[in-house]
Image (tube, helix red, strand yellow):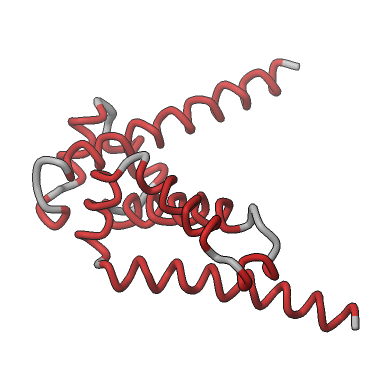
Length: 144
């Protein structure tokens, strides 16, 4: 029982640390270009020690990659709200949902795009759509 409580506390602490790191990086990106942000900047802004940072990430790029991956996962969830056949016939509702999701934090996505580029973000989104539609095609072929 004590061991379970300890693991839960460590898990909550880990989640909290990662959130502090993420928020610190996003905050710093509002002030200066990503390339000029150091791990020292992040740990000072997050008010954590370097060891905590390095327990979760190897560098600031890895934090940014995690932020990007989380954002793309949310976009993927928005995409998957409709069956693939409907997306092909009428993509507007899904694109509207993705647009609304991005619209909730436009400044954040502008920063993300400034670092990975519009082409990079669109390539990632295209990959998500292609994968989703491809999985649906495999299911349809298996059913036939």
